[in-house]
Length: 258
Image (tube, rainbow, N blue to C red; front, side):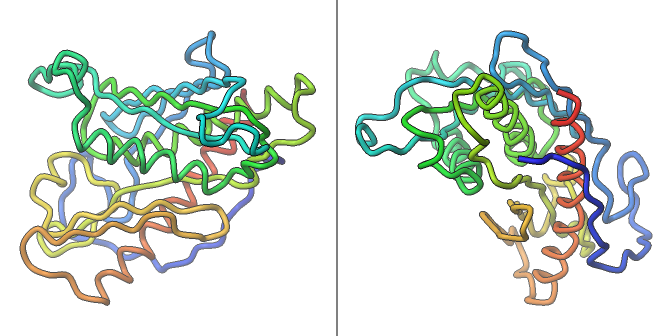
């Protein structure tokens, strides 16, 4: 896939807001976001994504096998594992391996990351091989699942490009990018990319996962107290889309640097 940087047209009119945000951000402004490629030298694709104080390490592994139910189908598989390091938060969280089982939240996030990445990959063109994305939260300050999706998409693109460079695949089966962000209503204001302090007191919390062509993989909006209106939902989607277009540009630049 050609990862050339493309400028996306503005899709909304940005307005000023009187609400104070940590770091002085505008209501429609992403946290400072960095993507560092090749963070782990031993992985086929590796990216450290930093969104403000949230940091997630995303590593891609290519395996020459598929789950049993896909054998002899000619199709590949893309899946994800998600975990949070014990001191990613202010207080230590025991490793789930010590508890003897994976929690429901972890299962939910892993499935979300996996289906988000599969939405932009031609599994038939991938062939009977599996790519596993390990997303490990080093530090959490809100938006870990959306950061994991955005970072894992780049790690996946890097791994597939390596298969092309090695002659294993003729072209990359990843035909577009996918990225995600959070958005919510805090003190009656719509805010993009919530940090934990904002998320913890949000009246409405929403995650948006979007592909480059504008397709929506996930739009999960939950009212914690007062119901939100259709107009507020449309506004949240518009602002989230503008933010995700900025993430696409960061992803393309990172893939060019690899």
